[in-house]
Length: 319
Image 1: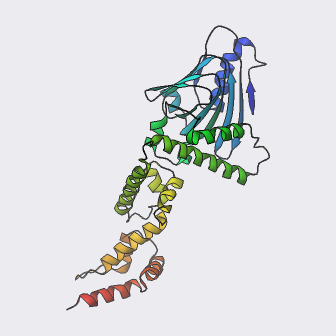
Image 2 (image 1 turned 120 degrees about the vertical axis):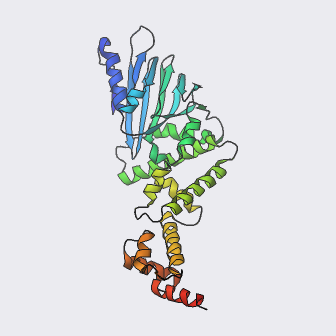
């Protein structure tokens, strides 16, 4: 899709551009700089969850207010690459001077502004924040900063993004488009993690997050609705990122939840007491809603049924 002010009367161009930018990107206010005529062009492609846009326009200022944010339905992250001209980005109390070839990260859920002092061109990559799969505090650390792409990971990323912006996704099968978009999202996540932890503290941050997730799982084992989706939502990360965390632990989230539930069931069934709870009651207390499924899972883990386990443990404790 291409939107341009070329055929719009001069008196209507600013209103048209405000509407075009707000519909294509996110709601914001555009104010031209100077008194001369204003022209602009936006070309947009969809690639899976990724929207790729190229904006060329005369000098202007764009800003996104709290009221505009409140009226938006989805949290997005925008990654911009300055192709020509310069810009000044202000977000989260930081002011970044953006030159040609620089990259910026912008969170659309918080106010920001861009000032373009002369005609410019920029590529803008928008994606759902949940798809990015990095903690909110890492995004917060990189917004309002210009990221140079002349060295390091950025030097490899910049040529790829330029090619992607000129790529036509029209004839691309959906499965291919989704896979390509997923790879781009992973690249952005890597860049943000690299910039958020320049001193190598990423591993420490990851370890702390794993401990918080483990604590959350242990505190909610009895909730039958405990799931990767619920856990990710509670920690403001994506399900994809949650699974990536536990790949490095050598397990999956679902397997860990099942293992911890079975451990607690086994511990409770082994206790002696005058009024021991039924096997079914123990299973339900620890999140198993289907008794037959619980029995199969328990036997697979311990080699005996829950009732046999109770009998064996009770016999061992009898003097």
